[in-house]
Image (cartoon, rainbow, N blue to C red; front, side, top):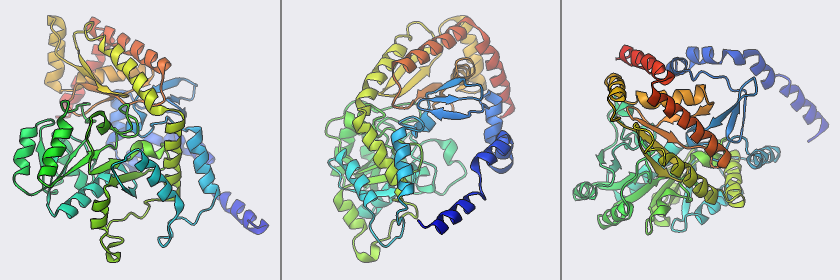
Length: 471
């Protein structure tokens, strides 16, 4: 860079000072959101006391202005697989920006997309090619398009309670009515119960099914089919010339203790696999649709069809660099093995509490994707309180646990889905024994309070009033 160019760049940079802007306007964050974005989000956060102000983040922790740490057991809905601001990913992004690459010319082949595809496919030995987009829902959209095109069939099956995204195609295979209501007409689709092979075969016999899309473990409720179900479903699909699509947007990249969730079951080899979230390193959105060679060759069958499926920002250098850095960290730091060990420690310690607490019904999941389900207690006093909450709105007890975990113990979690008494834990994959101890101790304290009729129930009354008011 010449001296003149450097001076010009410095002059331009002086016109925008991000640090100064945040210092001047950062305190307006909730007001700005209420005025210009989704006005219901700040309203909800104020109602449940989640309207915190986090100043910075590192690894598995947030920090407020007073230096208090908050343990993140949510990982940005799974995006922050390596925690926040992993130094290897940060350096890769600095390096790719400093390289001033000729990115997104559209009429060349840059090396980074090919290198990232090569790395991903090394973990997916039965798959051959990759399409890069920008998000999980986009990865799903690509898989739906590819499956419908190569089979020549319109209908895609999905499982009840599934979540595959919120754009129109992925919404068509979303099993949550609250997300679908008001957005019809959608694509031809049919829900089948998770694990129900008879229902699957009945639909396949109609001859118009292109594919079944399935999460190896459902994000909503942390549910999975019975052992052997995915392999049997795959055999049925192929017998009827339909495809199996594995949505690994949340379960992929080590979350369940294997690189992919479907790898827990021998013999499962999906025709198409969708990944995103953790591949970004928490910085630059990236999604990927992986598939078999014959599928890609049929979709991109001639030079006339070279752009029949594309994305303006797909394969951009920053996203590709982030993805390569993430996979490098996973290999070098043995992330998957760590998830397997830490996840088993956390799940087993929580499961041991089911005999201690009446309202703790089940702890399930794999790796660091764990569901904690609550259920109706036996004792009369607790049962009456439980019934009051259920009458107002199912899911309020789980919210009663989530709130004190944050407010009293500075631990961020989430209720797993609407009208569900389930808390889902999807922490950064880098957590260890320290974080397990902190969560179990805090959860135990909250459950003690709930079973003793303590302050948790005072907040429950507030939730009941809010639920009734929103009817």
